[in-house]
Image (cartoon, rainbow, N blue to C red; front, side, top):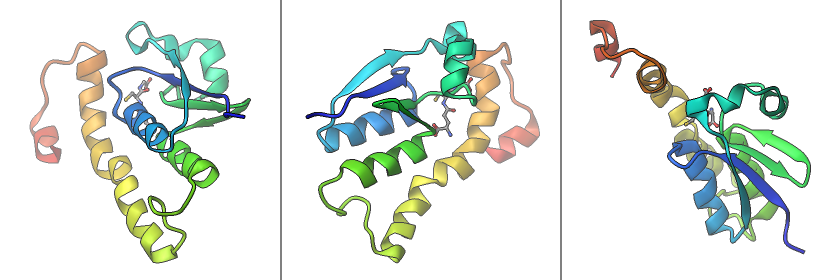
Length: 134
Ligand SMILES: N[C@@H](CCC(=O)N[C@@H](CS)C(=O)NCC(=O)O)C(=O)O
């Protein structure tokens, strides 16, 4: 029987897209539940109960809730991949995949910290220090 996988998402989100791409590669069907970040739906108590970090993606695998795209990607890979070609069991090979998998959490996070108030708030300029970070 196919697993019942629900993904709380918003279309343009890069971490959501990573999960959708992997689901496609693994031939998994996702039931998509949109979360409208522009109307702050992620702060509704029912969503915060699922994901206290108020972000998308959030995965619901038959009642098991997992949030954070990296955690979701590793979970889906470990649970549903037919072999280890994309996420090797060999520790060194896996560490190299992880370097790139988590690079957005380090490098891009600085970028996101600067961009978030521009995209979701009223900030329209970045200062000199922020320009150096970018
Ligand atoms: N580390 C998280 C980051 C997720 C994230 O920041 N998602 C953004 C959309 S791209 C979001 O949900 N922002 C809404 C908020 O922070 O309230 C992951 O990889 O899932």
